[in-house]
Image (tube, rainbow, N blue to C red):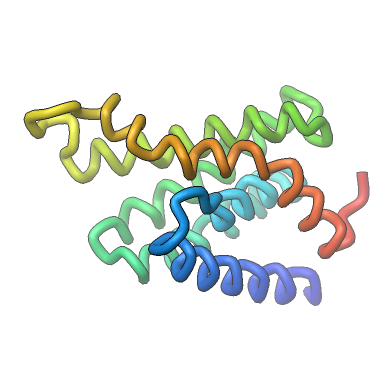
Length: 158
């Protein structure tokens, strides 16, 4: 129970940090998404789903137009991370980066489709994806570090 409360506190801190930092830093990783990935990889499908639901709700509070999507999307990301961890060795940094890539691209694609970006004139979905290359790259690069830190903080064992 203590680990769960500690995890929620870290999640809220990450959400606050991400909300403040995203406005000023273009290279800031999506820490909240990485926490959902962590829960899916190391906690399993149920924990990934529950943490995804909580993270989606809190993240949606800062972006009301995507709140409903985030509350559905983030639990799905937790489940995807859990399924990938059963297929590839979860403690391998490359496997963690691959899982982060799948999670980030899932979220970006779903947001683009939900907000109607592909239907607008201009660069469409591919252009929108390219415009977010900095946070995507930052998220993927730091994913093994963030997941390792969370594993240490929450005392998860291999």
